[in-house]
Length: 392
Ligand code: PMP
Image (cartoon, rainbow, N blue to C red; front, side, top):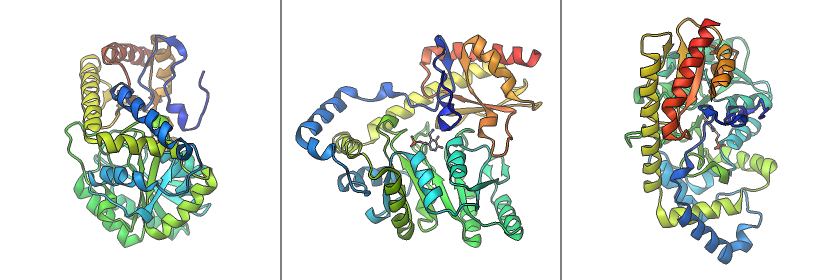
């Protein structure tokens, strides 16, 4: 059984009851949409013609050939960066640790949303940073709440200059910070001289193809942007990037070199080959359609099995991977996990996402990788487990 308590704890508990478990727990992409035949041809050509470079160490720079693939993705959300502002990573998880080790000072406080992606809070804690949750409203992080929190922390003598956020199709709530909130948030960051860590794995995965502009595009000097190929291509390549103001990019380059020496030349070359031949549009559209369909199946099944006026509250997201369920009467959703295991379904208990032990009254469902024909069955099992857990 999978026993990590780190970020990978949100991986599917695939082995708990053999293959009969329907896992709503992992934030995994649906790799059935990848054009594997085409990719296999690209990879074999790459190894034949460029193997001596692709299997060699690289430098801690994004390979020149991959830069158009990154700027193409960023431009779709109104963001952008020059080559000297880009730092390669092995995915955003490494980007988070690099920021925590390279930019922050041990003991300082990082402001963040709660609930938050546990991989981020784990990275910050690993680097010896403190966390402070910013009050939220129905749309996510409240700009005025941020202002008050920073002023209070500073009055108490804490260093508070970093804000972590995942503003689009947030993990775990699925929410997107509206454009007006973003403007106000950046105003507060400007006023209080805060640096924003914008973690954006899901931004391009809206169901309707519309994009909310990234914070980085509006305030490139104030935002350290974490990009990744994990959700628009595949996480197995472990390839992503940081776009940061030039002075921070220099520091982060050194930090990433300390962590991993260099990015994977092979992964960068594979992504370059794919982008040069196919571009991103078709693949991203295919991912979007796949997730839109799965999300609709899950939301319809939840409506059918849990209703909208029962003990569980939830919203239909407009993109991303997740639906967040909250229990009206509070309590700890950990009490449902045993019943869920018995019924052959899994989810991630909300307490996992709390910055300070909160959100134990919630749970996160991921629809992104469940076979379509199993979603309704999984929700039926979940509903049975939740009813049983309530009665226990
Ligand atoms: N940030 C968020 C919000 C995530 O959901 C994830 C993956 N679940 C990551 C970062 C890490 O992604 P990766 O390292 O694969 O790029």
